[in-house]
Length: 104
Image (cartoon, rainbow, N blue to C red; front, side):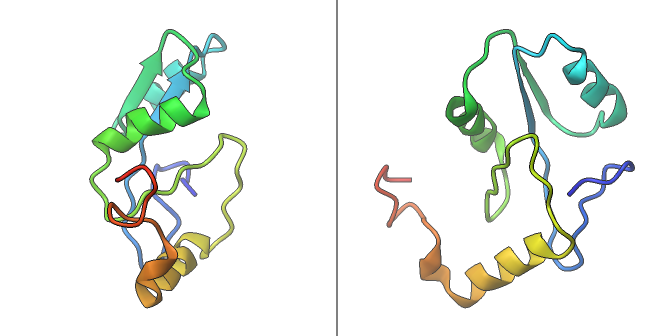
């Protein structure tokens, strides 16, 4: 999804990347900060868990849609554009503040 230059591999969709490092002791948080200094990095001293880390990043997200990925996810070329196009064609397919069981 993100190239070595820090650009998202999408043809038609803008994207914002937020990174949460949960209790990273292997130097990965520092490596991300060095390689992608323009991406917000939430380096946590404790492992919040996947859901809490996503919630932390989601609070800062500014986009129309949020896609949360595990660190080992491989995003195929065009996949993000296809997801966005599908949601735009069928807005009821995703959750929003009115349809989410958690109230948004």
